[in-house]
Length: 217
Image 1: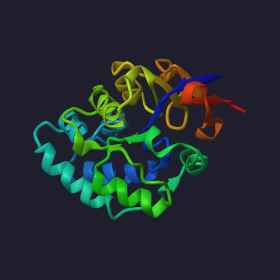
Image 2: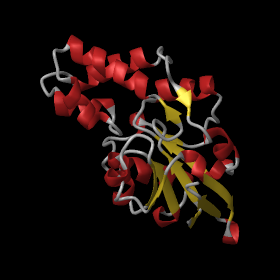
Image 3: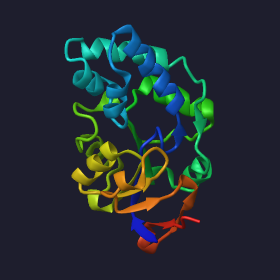
């Protein structure tokens, strides 16, 4: 399958970086400290900003204070965090002004993590700090298109979570879901599904655009 676009917006966790163990460890400790149900937390956490997850599962707590404490812990914890296969060559193949990262993580965690893992730090990045409403609200992806200066219909989003796919769809963007963290039947809202990130390749398209090839070998 081929999709042409002018810009690509990438989610981070689950798409470019495998941080599942770190995130589970983070929420597990927080659930234990606050006597909360870890299963219920994980049911809503994936793809969402921490502050919004906390508002859902623990409305009696100060979401902003708790999210800040979690970010401080996460910023020092790289155990088990690895680059997803294919991420570095894929990003290196893209013009610097034609891609962005749109993540539910905070900048104080995201930028050092990219640097430590040897991933390119994008020229354009939207984090949890840059929006009022996070995924599944379309605001993060609309902000990504704005900083890139690209119409939403010319953007393609690469996501792994239903919340992120919903956000991209709400922003009027096409989506490629990577089946790294969710079952295929949870990704049916996406325009296309890749089995893994390494099944994506980008080459020059028509009129200076990008052509995304999905091989699913």
